[in-house]
Image (tube, rainbow, N blue to C red):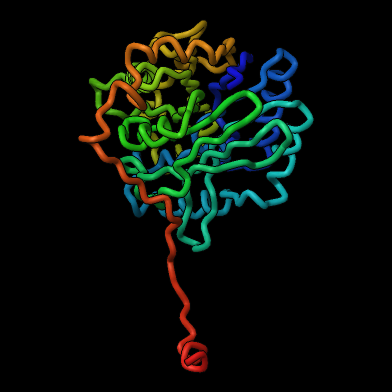
Length: 326
């Protein structure tokens, strides 16, 4: 096996709120900069295209309903014309992209929290739909299924991804590790409305370190920020929005190595992009001590079964056709 060495970039910033085209333009500007600085992989925040439903946390469900409608109108399908520049940017800049979107479902009441995995040829090689929306997010997103719990082989190595809180799901993480994941993208949103004693930045770092240490792999974290534009948009419905959506230690972005330690510079709350050199060979030696996918486990005792079948909403049966066959 060829263990690659490459430079990676991760972004901590806000989208252009509920504006798909302008958010994609913003993403492309980061992609170009990262590529010019030698990065072969760039990670973007959760639902970066084109915004997080903060109204679920600071409004009643009735108040927030009109915002759900706006979000649906600004959700995307991967086949949309508006998405093509993003795929082209991956190809033009020879860079792999993992980015969060609000993915429009088949039903007009259905949005998925989805991470896209795009290779350096501009090909969408995979997408992961968040398995369980967290807490107030259940007012917005539909749950994904096991069909998207996959690891994707790329020119730089095997990539897997989970969104925000599902990085605490031990079984989901183990499912990715069992498929040979060596590069994990964990993307998040800034959440100032967490309980007073909850340090969001620290919680993100702990989750990333746990996955890296347990699996002996690299975790790349990308977290969004809350712009003044987002707060101003919600102000008419929530006059004290600044108080509710402003808090230190709400966002963390950076890199965690196979030993669970931070690599290079990390961003806490500040907007920007940081880089790290990734050497996948460093994933080998730590496994001699703890390889939970091999010698450091007891598969005669533990048996994890994962349903990877896509959810089917309806099955059409032509009884007349069956009768004729008989």
